[in-house]
Figure 1 (cartoon, rainbow, N blue to C red):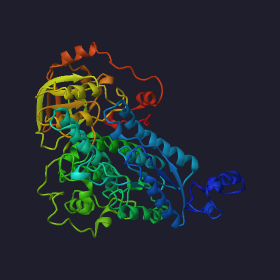
Figure 2 (cartoon, rainbow, N blue to C red; figure 1 turned 30 degrees about the vertical axis):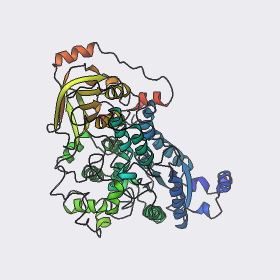
Figure 3 (spheres, rainbow, N blue to C red; figure 1 turned 45 degrees about the vertical axis):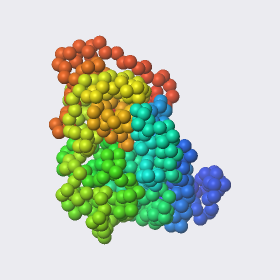
Figure 4 (tube, one colour; figure 1 turned 135 degrees about the vertical axis):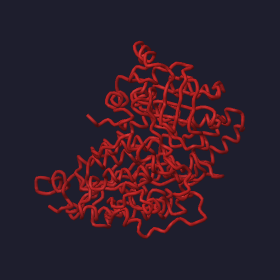
Length: 556
C-alpha cells in the first residue's frame, strides 16, 4: 500500500474487491487508475444561484489538474441554497441548516468511498464553512477552492444595492421603473455577492487560515486567475499527499487567530463569528466569543469595502487581493507567519515576495491610519444577552444607542412595519424567535436592515435580534442574542417600551429593568412558537447548539 493510498487501497486492492472495481469501471476507472490515490472533488454546482452556476466548470478543470498530477479524480456533488433569493422568506430558515447538510454530505460520501484526499469547491455563503467542516472532520490531505466573486453591476451596483432600493421605493424616493432598472443590471453574471459580505468574508478567512491556495479568495469567478487557481490544485494535492499534510496540521489556535484578524481588517461579516466557531469546534480547537473580543482590541479595520464602505471585492482584486494586506499585517506583527498552509509552506513563506499595494489605491488603509482602531465586530453582554451577542459597529452609526423597544415576533412583521413607515425614530426594533431553535434556522435579517437603510433610518434606529445578519447588513445592528427567545432568553421577555441601551465601547447590551422584574416575566413566559415535528428543520431544532457556540449539530 502506497502512503498516498491510505484509504482507497482497502476499497480497490485484492481479488476480494473485484465487485467494487467492477462498479467503478463504468464510471471511467482503468486498470492504472486503481493504483492511483483517489481524490474526491466535492462540487457545490447548482443553477439555483449565480454564486454556484459556474462551479462545475471549475470542478472539471480541477479534475483535469488532479488527473494530470498522476492522481485519480472522482467528482461528486453536494447541495447549495441561495441566501439572496430566499432572503426575507420562510425559505431562509434552511440557509444555516444547509451548512450542516453540506458538511454531513461531504463526510458521508468521502467516508463511504474511501477517497485519499478531498477538494471542496464553494460559492454561496454556507458553502464555505460547510465544506470546511466536512474537510476538517475527515482530516485527510485536502484544500478548499473558492468559486470567486461576481463582477460589479452597472454603475457599481450589487445585490445589496437592489434591496436598499426596495427600501427607497417603499418611501417613494424612487420610481418602480428605477427599481427594476437596478434589479436588471446589478448582477451581470456568475459569482458570489461582490462586497465583503459573508461569501467573500469566508473566502478570505479560509485563505488566512491556510486552507486555500495563496491569492485565491479575491479572484473574480469568471477570470483567467480563477482558472489558473483551479489548474494549480493537482500539484498542490499531490504535495499534500506526499507530505501527509492534513487539516489538523494546518488548523491551530494561531491560524484561527490569523483568520479572525484578517476578517476584522477587511470589515467582514458577523457571520464569520458563527462559522469560525463552528469550524474550530470541528477541529477540536478551543475558540470562543471572548477570543473575538480579545483579538478585536488590537486589530484595526482597514478596508473601505461594502457594505460599510464603497468598493467591491473585484476592486480589491485589481490591487492584488488580500495578500498585500496580510503582508502588511505580518510585517506589523499582527499575524503569526509560522502557520502551515496548503501550499506546503508557511504563511510567512507564501508572503515573502508579495509586493505592497500601490500608493494611490484607496481601498486598504495604512495600519497606522485605520478606518477604525479596533474591531467592528463587537461581542456584547449584559442582562439582555448573558451568553453574548454579536454587533457590527463600524463607527459610522455611532458607538451607543438607547431607545424604547418595539417588539416583533418575526422578520415579516418588522419589514411590514418599516414599509408602512410606522417605526418611530429613536426606537430599538426587536425581532425575536428567529434563533437557531426558534426559527428554526436563524434567518438573516438583510431585508429589514436594507429597508431601514433605504428608508433613511440607518442612523435613527437600532435593530436587535436572536437571528443573524447577512454580510450585506449595516447600520446599528446586534444579532446572535443568546440565549434566544425560543429557549427562554431575556429577548423573549421584552415588552414594547422597555428601554434598551447598546454600548459598543463597554461591549454591553442591557434592558432597564430590575432582576426581580425580569424574574417575574420569566415565571410567566411561554414560547410563542411550536417547533416543527418532522423533517430537516425539526431535526435541526432538536440538535442545534447555541449561536454563541457556533450553532452546530454534531456536538453531542
